[in-house]
Image 1 (cartoon, rainbow, N blue to C red):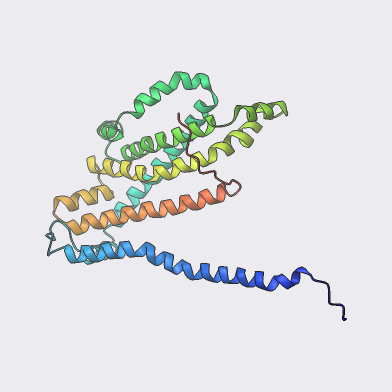
Image 2: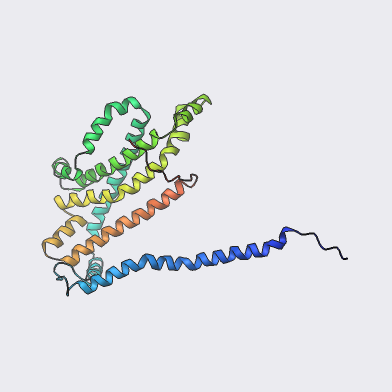
Length: 286
């Protein structure tokens, strides 16, 4: 009887490799289908909108998507929209950055110091309860009709979302972990960079993503109230002249702003939090 070769794991390599290849192929084939499923509702909505504008709804109220596309082309081809884009873009960036920076610093300071939290939290809560849009006329009195009032309104709307998320993130740190780190000889700087900031990072990113549309709301409301230039002024003027295509064109541009900002924030979040497997738990109650 001929002695056979010893059995090795290579006998199973081919089936396992083939199964992996089939799974990869199936995943690759599923991606176009997933994109199609995502696009179908939007395509269906556009087709219904195109059909309904006219027969069901007068075009003076809701213009056709083709008319909106034509208006967008005219705005960019003529250069009419660029000054508005530049103004609104600056207001969004400065307001967002100031609001995020203030929210991170304030949330971290109050989260680390229970004494400060007891003193200032009632005031922060009271101010948070004020509708921020109601502050637009006051900011215009203080900062004028230029970019300053819009930046201030966007910053104050962003601040509270980031503040409360950072505050919750810092307070969620296990006190036993803090005590253990101190026993091991860590100083306050090491405690900040190796314990509190990593714990608060997911909360910071959540607050930053939630704040994106609110910064847009703050800027546009400010431009609606009083402005010399900006997308809010453009939309307001289009509405005043019964130009629904212009209104929708402005809305589409704002939608593009928010979409691009969300994509960039998502990439930043994946890069910064690559080291951390998120548990999926929401921010702690504060």
